[in-house]
Image 1 (cartoon, rainbow, N blue to C red):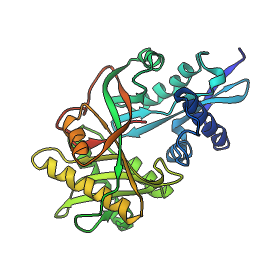
Image 2: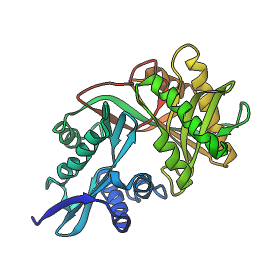
Image 3: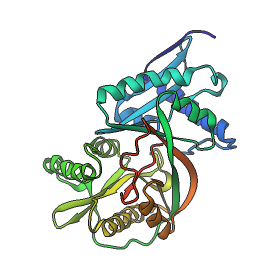
Image 4: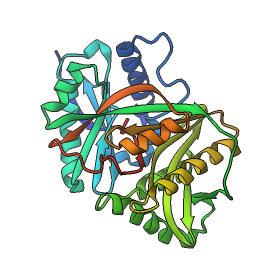
Length: 311
């Protein structure tokens, strides 16, 4: 079989890692075109945190990779991909080892992943590491609507000396949903890499909702698309209206950048958020399942107005 080694993914590995990721998904899904088109989730996730990206090599040749993401007390990993020529050789399990070690160092209270609901092979792999399938996750899409609502407020427009306070205000929104849940890393990475922007919704001066959006090619969105990677409205009375304002703001960003489509994912355990997206014309284009460590549901409850999909 040869010698398998697992270690940090280097910058000069990224082109090969990207090729393997696209080939693996295209092969599994039976696609005739490259997976993801001109969207990118390899370079962007490596650049967000190179210490959270790992590669597997067979006799020195890269054959797989995995990326982990930290959202404060919450973490997830993916994509985890292996070159199809080397499937069923235990390489996926080897790539899980540094991810779990990293999750322990991050002191997470909740962790999970997105995988294919119909694949017993994928579900079986992750169950070995105490990740269990719970609710389906819908990846949804709709045409961008004509922008409505008030002026668009963006993180990129926040003065540098006020950004720390802004990130704290955003963390207060997500922390009210789940203790320690914090999107500062995602907000900063999107801003620094120029992947899109974070829309902010306020009541007066208080941030009450936010969404990290990727826009266009070279991001996780792809051409002509605004992808709401993660967004949340503060819980409690008025959450429905805050969530509606947040979705309006995301579409306003897409319209301002001339993007024709909106993409967003939602765990179906958040039933009311899912219904809200359906009511606005979003329709499911891909469906997977969230697998959660120790079978905990965390913030996946009916009344939580949160968009994410853990891909």
